[in-house]
View 1: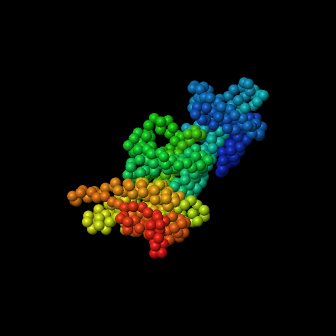
View 2 (view 1 turned 135 degrees about the vertical axis):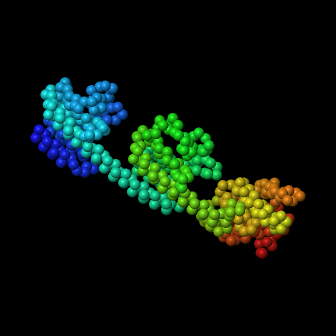
View 3 (view 1 turned 90 degrees about the vertical axis):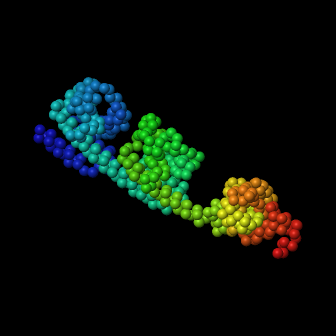
Length: 491
């Protein structure tokens, strides 16, 4: 008895310190246990989903590389051992074997089992040895739980520090897209996930729009083509509405986590992380950290959206939705820099609404504003994606047409003019109930009409003036104006 107490005391003293990993703890604990029980081989089995998986095997102080799985059957001797209905399990054939549960003293949790063996010998383990093995296994289990808890805390702290750094990077990103990509890459990396996807809410349309997806290699892919109506039965919509999970969500609840992004009680998006490829469980401690971090992501996204809205207001005219003159000048210089270095042709267009002062004087400024608003919408609808329109001042619109010669630009503007003639502006208080619009349009091209922005704008304005002198409602290039009015080059 005294010898057993001394053994337990030495065992407790050797294990009662901080082990950074389970490997280090098991190395120390199993070596000591093998000597105390006089076993040549000791195996550490960990319980997992109805089976015991061999984690470590020590044979005469040498670790063995072995794979072994013991499937637990109902009412089997090993099952009863792990359920606490037996304290030990031993056999002498083909050699002496002893199983003891790997369970902390006084606890209900069973981590697995220790197997002690004497290969080549049928000398059974004595009662004293079985008692010692059981007590040592309980001490080892207690320390294993503590080591796992400490490792989990250190892992969570490390992840929290990394995510805090990512939050700072996210907050300093100039665009939502850039910040979102960085944050998802960090989440996938630090939580060892297969994939992370972000969806943002478009409240006016009541749809959840895909933003970006990041896979386990950190590769980002756009999800902009995905739109999920909030009124539908899609599982993402159910999460956003706060409905209960559907059968598919319940089936994969350990491998797929849905995290709504909430700001001041309002959901603004959804973060979805999963391990569907690796089939690894996403543990509760990680879900808790991700859930708290989702709130920070939501706040950052909301702040950046607000910043972009404010920035957009400073760059775009609120009435027409077109860029303001300052923004246009910046883009014009960028396009000129491209064509100066051998890029494709570039044209610039000036548009002036015919008799716009008369519309304001006759029908009021509200009708005039509506006319400009409809003109802006028509321009944005009919132009190419690479074209860049702006409100230059009053009723004047200027448009950059990259990759377009003067002839190309005139053809594009000709089609726009046809659409403009068909546009009708409602005027309920007038006898006609509506009015139409026309415009005079001038075109200048780089380099034949000028190489500087101010020269090209001046030439386009001269071509526009030539249209006005010929009755308005038309399109003219600067070169055409020169041919019909040679003196124009000298003005």
